[in-house]
Length: 77
Image (tube, rainbow, N blue to C red):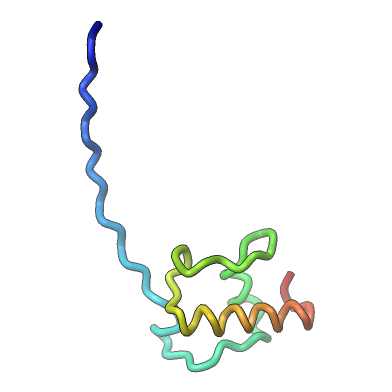
């Protein structure tokens, strides 16, 4: 029997995700801006989590509220 050596793959450290809303210093996320809100949703309409989008906790909460309001008014799915 011949054993193969497993070579360790070196992972490059992940680039830290920066909150898009903190960069522009947004204090409010408007629910009428459907183009921006749709970037933070999957194709099925689910809200993407913080670990994927990189938003901070405060802006993620505002984003979730804005998406839910936009759903009520039928601006996004």
